[in-house]
Length: 156
Image (tube, rainbow, N blue to C red; front, side, top):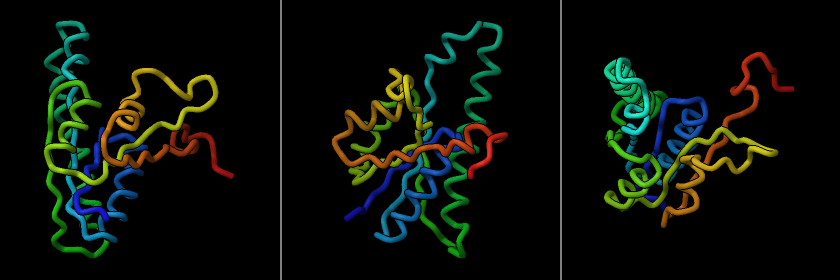
C-alpha cells in the first residue's frame, strides 16, 4: 500500500511524534523512507540583517539534527541498516514538501502539527494545514500532545 513515505520534519516535538508514526507504517509496508527538512529563506530575509548569518547557521544545524533524528529513529529498534534518504530544500515549506513528495513518487507524507484547537484550530500559515489541503497523496498529520506542548502540564 505504501512504497515511499516522505517525513517532513522541522525537529519539533510534533514532528518527532510524526517520525515515530511514519516509521512504524514504513516498517509494516517495507517502504522507502525519505526525511525532508525545508529551510524557509523568508524567515532569514525577514530577520534583522545583523543576525541573518547566525540564523542561517542555526537553521542548518536544526535541519541536520532533525534529519539525524529520523535516521537514528529508523535504526533504533534493533535494525542495523535502515535505508533513509535525507534531503534539505529551500523555499516555502508546504509547496516544497509537496514538490519533493511528487519528485520521489511518495505514497504518503507524514508531518507533525501542534494540534491547536478552539479559536486557533485553523491558523492560517500552518505548514501542516497547507500540506493536508493541497497534497495529491494522503497526508498523515500527527498532533503534538498537550503535555508535550507544555512540559509543566501533566497528562492525566
